[in-house]
Length: 153
Image (cartoon, rainbow, N blue to C red; front, side, top):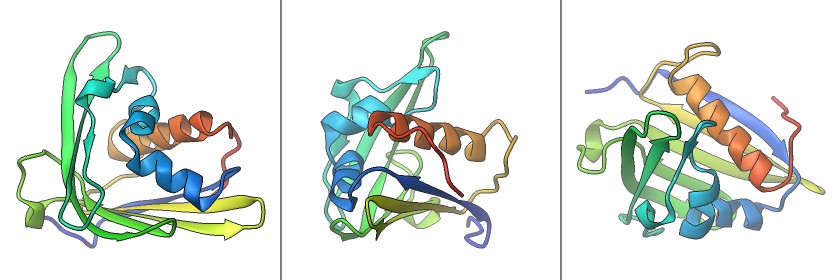
């Protein structure tokens, strides 16, 4: 079993509404644009999202230099529209009971929204070149997608 006491949290204040961020996380057309680190892409045809409790998602990241592909997926555990997403994150056919858990929350702050991304079940820290840095880069892609470049947190 993985250790859910391990993990990390990333916080961004973004110039978007909670509804816009919700859509960015749940609309396959939007996910294909940003859900990958810098230097990769997510082909639209690889993205499948069934955003409901028990629904699954799958996407493929393609390294732009090597062409290597990484298929990722999971199961939605909780969805509160425009407020909170909870899903497993790992291999599409992995055991959902033994898979890291992502929780994304959206908190309105006037014209901005605080998005908190929490990943449990892996270790990560700035400079690791893996989970933490990868998700940091993915959230940078999201910020660029919605037109926000400043990072808070």
